Amino acid sequence: MNLLRHVASRHARFVLSLGVLLGAFQFLICAAVSSVNVGGALETLVRSLPPLFQNLVASQLLGGFSPSGLIAFGWNHPVAHALGAAIAIVLATRAIAGAIELLLSQPLSRRSYFGGHVVFAVLSVVSVSALGILGTALGQRVFGMERFGIAALLRLAGNYAALQAAVYGITLLVSSFGREAGPVSSTGYLLVVLSYFAEAIGRIWSRAAWILPWTLHDYFRPQTILVDQGGILRPLAVLGAVALAGASLAWARFRTRDLP
Amino acid sequence: MVALEVSGLRKHYGSIRALEDVSFTVGRGEVFGYLGPNGAGKTTTLRILAGLVRADGGQALLLGRRAGDAAGRATVGYLPGDLALYGSMTGQALLDTFARFRPSRPPVLRARLLAALRLEARDLARRSKFLSHGTRQKLGLVIAMQHDPELLLLDEPTNGLDPLVQRAFRELILDRAAQGRAILFSSHVLSEVEAVCARVAVLGAGRVLALETIEALRARLVRRMQVRFRGAPPPDLARTPGVVACEIEGLEARLQIRGDVNPLLQRLARAEVDHLVFPEPELEDVFLGYFGPEGSRS
Image (cartoon, rainbow over all chains, first blue to last red; front, side):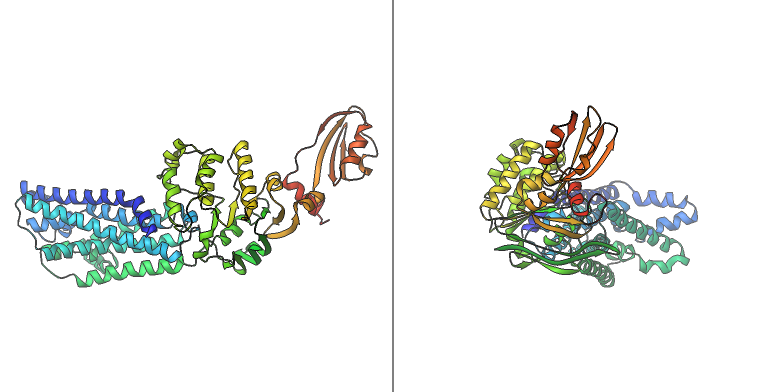
């Protein structure tokens, strides 16, 4: 409990700030969608683009130019991904860095230390997802848009949290082998960027479609949830499994490794 | 009564032998010096004792518990050699945070430590990243000692402290030993180990080269002296009792002396000395004492 309190005191402000930013971003997406004919403007814009770029935009707007499709696009926007990934990567990097030598010389087992950090990370990604969803719900309400059902919003929050948990699990695994925070966080960001662009390329270029199942971002499906009202059990299972495998392997390494 | 028992400790990093068959004990009420040059294996030993590094062989018992036993660390204090603190936290927050990890051991010594180490309220109010190296080291010492640990593991504790604070710190250490606390004092500075320790282990290339009382260590020390004469140096200088090496260059003699220096001083008193330098012994002099001027074990 002391450890959780310590980790929270170090990171709560950062997590909360990014969560509020995500919420504000989603709120602004609703504002834009409701006050400007974004769909019409985008359609005109897309028609003037070369075919490859038309495909690229279409890949990001699978839900079409309807308000729901544009809100789904807001959740797939690089800003939304960057905010979530920043939290996951920073928390995973800092878990095995800094004053760890002094902290683990306290009467604190490695299990408690590791467990405390993972619990806080899970709470963080869930909180940030909730704040983002709050932004969307509030935006729809304030701007008089057709509202999504609570089940859809919960599924979206779960999917977003699972994606960030997977990023956290992978970065934590890298962190468990690293000695310095810099290279670990760089690796985390690189993996996220690669996954994001690989997914985009897989969608716009049919010959690269085989890569899609190997990217994390393919399992984040706001369009499926908000536009098609579809289920996301398999994406959730895949992302959950990645998060769990990453954290488990990180623990296997961390429990026996020399520190710092 | 033994507070710390280290036997046959071994640690290799690939082909590098960081520690090989290291054994020693530290009794309650004892300040034990752990002396060696950089890279000798001092920090690795202390990290094993603190449960941070896993030994490849041997064992270490701290107050009867194996190193790495988290619960056992409640009565142990540890100061890392390479101290890292949370830069965004204030000194006060750091002290409180680390105190909370030992609810059964309140920080009874904090006020006394803050006064002795001259840590002011304004230092504690600042974020640690804005503090000087010496002030951060003082914070590390308070964190390690504030709960009055039964066993204290200190890795280069005076690193960055000014001479006045070093003296106050030595007095604190001796006082804790007088109260029955066991202290492992790692250092590469001979004079500070001499000032507080009763026994010492000399570490070199991961092995314990000597395990002696400070008196025995002093007796084996090879000290250096540099003398410039007004005339030609006395021809029998090298044969003076206690002189183990003598190198003469013009009017200057460089001497190495073991044991009693009085015969040499008496011999010099009969000569016309222009200038004499007799520095405080250093770690290098300890190694000279064990391996001799030519590097062979004496």
